[in-house]
Length: 418
Image (cartoon, rainbow, N blue to C red):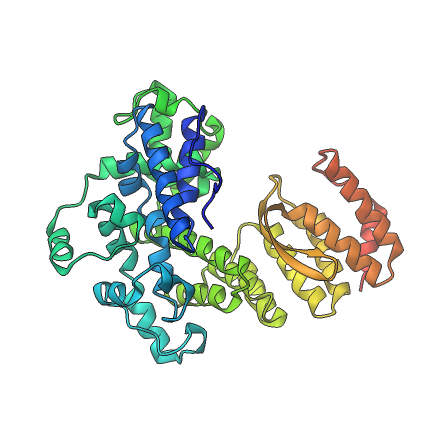
């Protein structure tokens, strides 16, 4: 859905807030004509306000946010022709332009040969859609209007915008809406370092960059890590596609379209076998459909080095509880708390309990959710002593303590939990 809904007037907002609204508006898929009009008005209003800070809002969309503007079209390529996206997107014409075959059935029902054909045809689609956003009229971009054959052929022959321009606008977007430095491009990290060092970065004014950037120590640490292990261009492109797929999958999950969400990562896994992030997300999306299958993907993600340990482990515990294996979930949580805890709190999308139901929730603390899950598991298996221990840990988290006062009781818990 498009947000905000009530008004397109955004007075007294800074650059970061305006770009966040622009980002939300671009990725929101309108459901009707009124939604579409509101989306266009919101984008236009933000674009005009950004000009007051010396920022070319249209260039920001074209060069810094093309994947955001075109995400609905990319998503439509996975969808059957009776999907709700066909109300606003001419999927037939877009498939013709992008040379993507029309699936003979919902993608979750396709055979291996057709899945492979779809996967191969979608490989270049993000690049082609970026080309369209860079060159089409902005009104056409906002309306998802497919181009003529003549325009498409003409754009294919044009040289792309200079890397310096694309990198600068991408950096402006990332410093506004992407908190995790691991998701920043290397070029964005370098531009941020230059700005923090000497306050000189070509395209933008001081007013455009007045919001504080990331912590200097974290910034230099991430730059050093990239210097030691540079990201190949192909990996950068795969990362961009991964985050785009994740946002699309979250939208599907919120609408209860679990098969469609899992299919996105099944496609991605075909091109990136054994990728830990893809396996983790595939497992996460599979939880409402099959806890046993989801658990298998999540365990494989952990074995392949998935970095956000508490998120992966919490998801595994969810699966175990769904499979009536609460004792194993409790043991897994205990092992994490004593041996695998990470110093920085990790948040993300999680399945959380609400009565008997599991609901999707965003920006949740994985550790806090794990503690609540462990308390419920301990109660279910009748371990009152462990209920007390997990409630103590919950109290510690609530007052900001990050370490657990492990005692002999903890060691005893670990040995007799089975």
